[in-house]
Structure formats: structure tokens, C-alpha cells
Image (cartoon, rainbow over all chains, first blue to last red; front, side, top):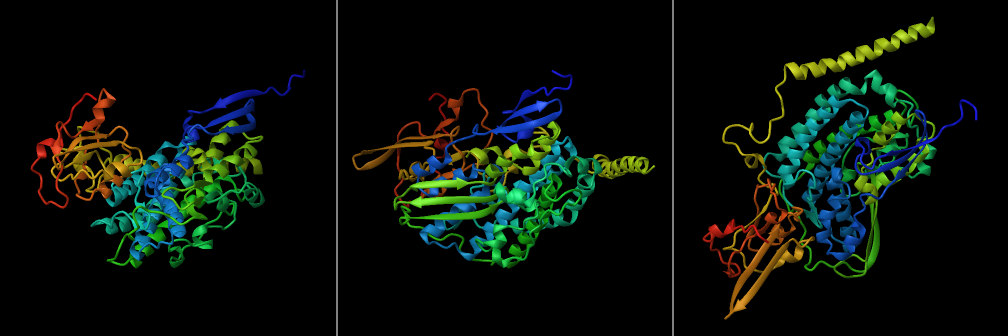
Amino acid sequence: MTEFALEEMILNMGPHHPSTHGVLRFIVRTDGEMMLRATPDVGFLHRGIEKIAELMPYESFMPYTDRIDYLSSLNCNLGYALTVERLAGIEAPEKAEYLRVIGAELTRIGSHLIAVGALLLDLGAVTPFVHALRERETYNSLMEMLCGARLTHHYVRIGGVAFDAPDGFIEKALSFVNHLEYEFLDEFNKLISFNSILIKRLANVGIITPEKALEFTLVGPNLRGSGIKFDLRKDEPYSIYDRFDFEIPSGSGKFGVQGDAYDRYWVRIEEIKQSCRIVRQAINQMPEHGEIKTKISKPFKIPAGEIYVRTECPRGELGFYLISAGGKTPYRLKIRTGSFSAMTIIEELSEGVMVADLVAIIGSLDVVAPEIDR
Amino acid sequence: MKAAAQYFKNIWDAVSTTAAGMRITMKYWLFEPSITVEYPDRLGKGIKAEDLAADRYRGFLGLNLSKCIGCLQCMRVCPIECIKITTERLENVRFITRFDIDQSKCMYCGLCVEACPASALVFTKRFEGACYDINELCIRHIKEAVKAAAPKSKAEGQNSENRTGRINEY
């Protein structure tokens, strides 16, 4: 054996590690500071949500969709509600659709704030994380006003939404998005995004070429970070997203190569801006009065059939595949989430990088552990 | 020479961009008031944390027994079965003999409150549920059998002392 022979060490990262965003384990084969391969071990947060869906009425499963991805619970509500509505042939009233979009886009803002904040926290920048959380606090109080819960909103119902917007909500939401777009993001970018140490940590790290992104079926901001402009809100509009004017940000190699960790980070910052635009347009277009919920039959039954509906969540495409046999409960509900496909590429990206870069890669892919396992 | 210039440029970039960030940090540290408060004793005089919650806040479930008609709809709609109600019929009068809500199980989804036709079940703003025994969170709203209200009756709040009736053993 020569002096410089490969000396492998197997390192266990997780299940409880601050940078894994939940209970998630990586088996890391290292040689000194270099990493040969990091194999993710998922399943610690498996709760059997798909099986639970088969055991209860359609309406009662709605709170469980909050728990698929707790950072974007309203988007998950919306996806499930649209799936059931399309199969049952129900249409939500106009005003409910606007309230759904406002809620969903605010949730997207809140989720992206956590995503960028947590990525920076993992890299060791604590201050920007607190700045992001400060803004998220406003979002939390807004949702508390709207639906009474700060994290697991359970706001969308089959056939509409639970409550109308309370007094003062619209004004507060408007001032929140204006503050975000015109004040906070500029300050945040000055604070950290253009910091040259951060750029050194993120640029040219974890490069995903467009071909590779398609190969691994990446979705959402991770796919757009590689330069592919695919957004279900634009390409396959659901709800009333075809009425709004917004752009799809995509990675262009701002400080490094296209598809690196910085691009994915930057796409999320830009998406916050676009979500602010959508919220502002939705508030302007929303009718003052109107129904917020279509009455559904009780007990609620769906004619036999099957449907697959996909919606754009902050973590990418969230698909519900629903089979109904005509009863009160689904025959089968399959949930496809974005974090799971993001998880598959980590093994490929981790070959031959430094151990510290693994944290940047995981953070930039923005995986949420409960969404992987469901 | 070029490498040396790049070396010093890198240092300058790191220092100048960090200084720009530090200026913002200093601004918040020195000139902006703190946005956090210390819970629970620094909220202000006479202010309870519950008062700061929004009107629709989904806290512990409260029951107005004088309105409850014993229809069991909340029990049926609950996805995790944390509400247990039993009713008995005695000489054509319906009595509610048990109304337990296990707040330690409850996930505060609000389906039961929506299902209640008499609006007897409501959300309170109470959220502090810390206790030494988890069974204390199983709140028994009925100590002894209570006559169920007639459907659609508009009698209000006469039995209010029963509303917070709590027994600590389970």
C-alpha cells in the first residue's frame, strides 16, 4: 500500500442533523475532506398518508394534506381540492378562486423565505435567516387572520374556501407584498445575495445541466434553476392562473455555470417577486362580494373514475392521482411530490465534492423531509 | 502579476460586500427597535398572549352546552376521533351523558366546528396546554348528564358554568 492510498471512511450524516431539514439520513463515503458518494436513506417520516386517505371521507382528508408539506400547506390543500373537484365535476365560485390564489401565492412566498433562509443558515449565515423569518412572521399573522392557523392552514375546502377575507386582510396583504418587493428583497440582496463569500460557496457547486435535470425528473425551482422554463401555472394553467401576468424566472449562470446552486437560490428570490405580482393582481381583480363555497352533497360521493391533477407547489409539481370506486372514500390516492425527485439527484451530485458542499447542495435543492416520505 | 491582482481583488470583494451587509446589520442593531418580545411576561401590562391572537384563531375547543343538541356530527366528521359523545334517551328526553374532547390528539383542523349545526362547538383562543399529565388534556365537558337542547332552539348561555367543567382523571 502506497502512502497516498485511498482511505475510505463511512460517515453517518443524520437522521438528526441540523442541515438535513427534518429527519433524513445520508450515508457518506469520504476520503478526508473529499466525498466519494452520499447515499440518502429516506423513510423516517413515513406516515402512510396515502393509506389514511383510503380510510376516511374526502372532506376529512383535507387536514392531512397540510402535513404532506408543512411549509406550503395551502398549496397542498389546493392541489387536493382541485383533484376532487375535477373528478366530481364541481366548480368553485369566482371569489373563492381568487382567495385560493392569494393564499397559495402568499404561502409560496413564505415557503421560499424559509428555503433561502435555511440554505443560508446551513452555510453559516445566521443573520439573513432571521431577516427571512421576520418577514415570514408577517405572513404567519396574515394567514392567522385569514384562516386561524399559522402553519397547517387547512383553508381550502372541496368546492371553495372556508372563510371570506376578514376586514383589514386585503390591505395588510397588499402592504406586505409591496414591502417585500420594493424594500425587503433589495435589502436582503445587499445583505447576503451579492456577498462574495456566499457566491464562492454557491456558484459552480452542484451543477445540474438541463439534460440531467430532465433525466432525473426534477420539478419546480430546481428544474427552472437549470434553465428550463417550465411552470405549471403558465404551461398548464389550473384554477385561474391564466388571468395573471407574470414571468417564469430561470437560471442563467448568474455568477457561475448554468444550473449551479446559486442559480437555484436566485430563482427562488426571483419567484418571491413574481408571487408578489400575482397577489397584487389578484387583489385588484377580486370581486368584492360573492359566494365562497359551492354546496356539496352530503354524504359526499364521487362517481367512479380516475384522474391525475398536478399543481405547482413551492417545491415543484405536486400530483394527486385519485381513483374513485363510487363510494364515500377514495379507492386509491397516490401523491407525487417534488422533494422526492430532488432527493434522487443528490447521490449523483455528491460525487467528488467537499463534505461542506453537500450541505449547500441539499439546501439549494430545498427538500422537506415529510414531503419525501409522506 | 495578474494572479496577485486577482488575489487582492478577491480580498477586496469579500471585505466590501461583507461591509455592505454589516452596515444593514448595524442599522438594525443600533437604530431599529427590537421586533421580538419575551414570552410570556414582557407582552405589556395586562396583556395575555391569548389576546394577541386573531379573531379566527384555532385554539382549544370550547363547548356551549346549552346549545348542544347531541347530533354527533362533530364526532363523525373528526378525522382522528378525538371527540367522544354518548347520548341516552329517557322517557322521550335526550340526555348527553358524555362529551369528551381529547385536546392532546386534536389537530385543530376545524372540521367539527364547521359541522356543528347549532354552533355549540367553538374555537377559543386558549393555546397554552402544558401540563404534567397528558390525560389532563382530555377535557370532559360534562360532569353529569345534561338534557340535550331541542334542535333550532335559541336559548343561550344559561349553563355557562358547565362550559369549562374539567375533571383531571380520565
